Image 1 (tube, rainbow, N blue to C red):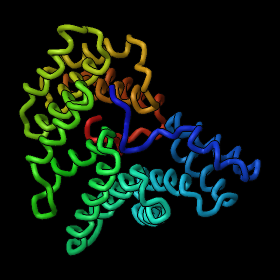
Image 2: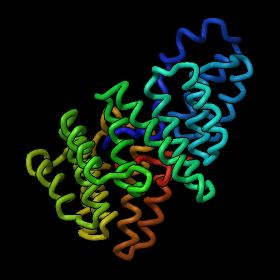
Image 3: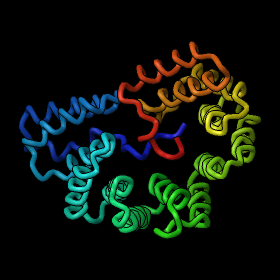
Image 4: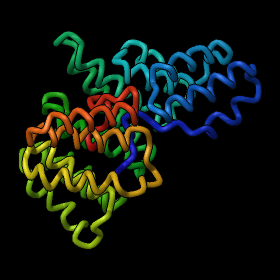
Length: 293
């Protein structure tokens, strides 16, 4: 499985230098907030980091993280305010531009009709800025792929550009490219090429956890080959988690498995799988995770 990039993983080292002048309470609240995030307890993480903010005003890292949490809770206003301030303070930081693009995208979904095109164009511009600053960062290529795959031409969406981003991802990492091509095939209601991307891997490496998960994802989203998808996901759960697995990784496997059990008419197993997803990540919400997840 691939790590989520719609919500960034928080690294403790990112705060190391900045903590030198903080109060002990703020330092503790930040550490606890980070721990809550890693466990998928986003409501608690938001509360703790907001409390820490009182001891560290105008802190770009906190603006970034609290902006990302505002996005998780659909608070476009707070997300835009925080992330615009962060970008103004550090205009050369790609992660801030990418997060700001997410904020513009969220704002566009609820804005009045006359405001939607402008917000969508700002979303694209922010994603492009992030990718220009760090062209080899897969997360920023995924943002561009998602925009061009889903946005109408009126605001800049182009299928050809989505394909170019998929190939750019393939140039960075073979599996990233497979996931990208499969995602585009699924969006076009053409599941067999999507399955084929991961069948090719599984013929050589039957226990590849990423290929197993994404085969199951194809079965879930395409609503076909469900029994094969169930077998792939159950095998995935038997394997050690990948080194880059986070709180959402295990939750996603259980969630997809629950969906497939529903599709084959087994509500008891479906309920058990969905409950396991919530245990793995208490604030689990599939809609908030990235396109490729």
